[in-house]
Image 1 (cartoon, rainbow, N blue to C red):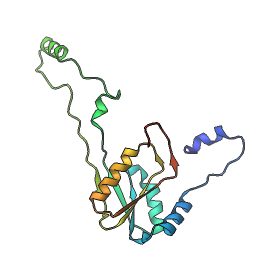
Image 2: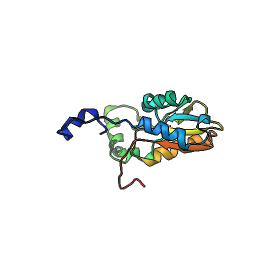
Image 3: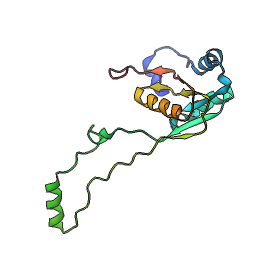
Length: 165
């Protein structure tokens, strides 16, 4: 189970927490040829504790992807209020006596930044769950642009949704 605090509500018997990391590290050592020429990649800063655990066990360097690639559709997907009609804005501004100011500030996207070196190395992306494939594709493209010649991905859970293929 993903959330430790929710486990007791699902089971009437004692359960053990089985960790995937020993199996995944053994898999990396066994099946990724030349894994000593690899780096462990944390796809975002929130994954750093888990990824650093893998890096320590495998004695490999740790690389972190920082920043976020957001769609331009953030304004229309319901997370933000719709923009005000310009006639309402002009009417309110003239009645109050204020100069017209832009109501919506253009959204600033923090660029994806790679902290560490992956040039001529195998990149092993570590994460706990896949919920949006596009984020992993973007991370893989960034790693490829920075010189990683092979990219692998390890995760211990998956969430299957209708949009996830």
